[in-house]
Amino acid sequence: MLIDLFLIAGGYLLGSLSSAIIICRLLGLPDPRSQGSGNPGATNVLRVGGKKAAAATLAGDMLKGLIPVLIARALQADIAVQSGVAVAAFLGHLYPVFFAFKGGKGVATALGVLLGLHWPVGLMTIATWLVVAAVFRISSLAALIAILLTPLYIWWLIPEPALLAAMLFMAALLFWRHRSNIQNLLKGTEGHIGDKSQGPAE
Image (tube, rainbow, N blue to C red):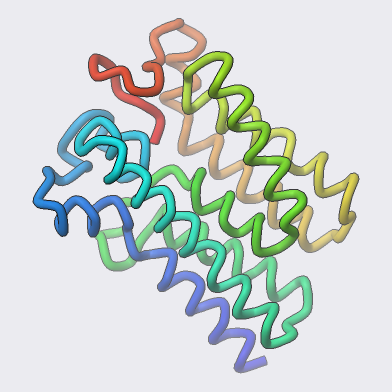
């Protein structure tokens, strides 16, 4: 039980490391919280610092979700604990203790934890995001559709109640964090990927 608690706490602390803020500081770029959409995520870093900075941010956000779940799996934690670690890492990104509990919207970190929990589900979610993003060029729309379909992928491939519950919880939070983007989508004013004139989703 103590090890399980350490794993969950470690997942939250690792998730609390804001890749966007750290990378922008290392590269001498403006704080992403003060630029563009104001969101410390990969899409906003693309606007602030370009493709390399955005790619590094994306990788960092995914890894901080992937790594704690893989550690839990390596220690043979059961699926309920793995799911708890996944949620903790996701919450760390949304509400980071190291950055005044003001974090990103969680898309990349959610993808990372999914790859750790069940890589086929993770790949299907990433593929969904890529297809929607390629067609519509809207990051938030791609994220929302991908996450909306993910519980169905889990139910189809690995119908574990704990995993499904964790994903439904993360999906609900992700939709909540994207509520302004949803309003913009309904109005037809949501920014496109790479668009420097409007605030992107992440």
